[in-house]
Length: 271
Image (cartoon, rainbow, N blue to C red; front, side, top):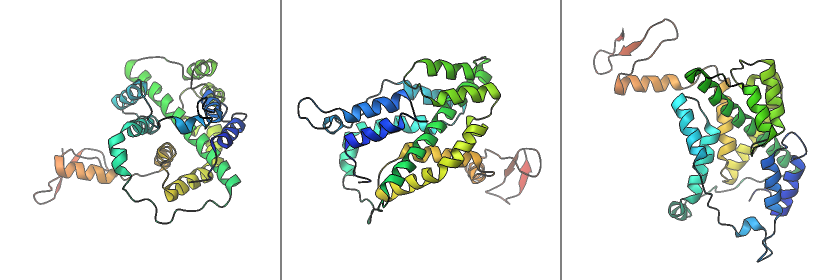
C-alpha cells in the first residue's frame, strides 16, 4: 500500500523532516517509535502493537469547548474521531467486508510523493495550530480574557508536547499583528501554503485512490478551501432550515430577516 516503506525507512524520513520546518517534539518521537525494534520478537515495534489508540479526554474537551464557542476545529475533531474509530473493534471487523478501490492508483515517483507528503503534513499542521489559536481568540472575546497569543506560542515553544519550530513563526506573526483573524492569512504562512498546496492536494487525491484514510490531511484542506471561498453552499442549508423549521434567513441584497411560506403561496415576508 502506498510506497511500501518499512518502519525503519519511515523513521529515517521523519528524522530528516525533523531538521527543517517540521522540527517538533512529535515528529522526533515519531521517528524514535518507528525505529524501535520489539525486544521480544525483533520485529518493528509498531507492527506488534494493537492499532487501538486510547484517549484521556483532552482532545474531546478541546473540541467540545470549540463547539461551545462556535469555532471550527476540524483537525482536533478528526483526531478524536480517528482514535474512536481505531477502538471500535466490532464495526472495524465488520468493515473488512467493504469493497475498496477497484484499481488502486500507482505512485510512480516515490521521492516526489514523499516530498508531497512533507508539504501536506506542514500545511495540515499549520491549519491545526491556526484552529487552536482561533479557539483561544474566541475565548478572549467570549469571556473577556486578555490572553496574549504570541506569548502562548512562546510558552508552548519552550516546553510541551506540541512544541515545534513552527511556533517561532507563530509568535512572530502575532507580534506583527496581534489582531490577526487567522494565522493562515499572515504573509509568511500564506506564502508557505502557496508552496505547499499542490503537493497537499496530490497526497489527498492519491490517498483516496489507494483507499488509505487520511482524515487529518483531508479535513485541513477542506477547512482551507472553505476559508478562502467567497461563497459557500451554506445558502442552500439556510433554505432547507427555513423550509423544514421556519428558521429564517438573510438576503445578500438587502438588510433584514426573511421567511418563505413554503407550504402556502411561497411568498417571502420579512420577520
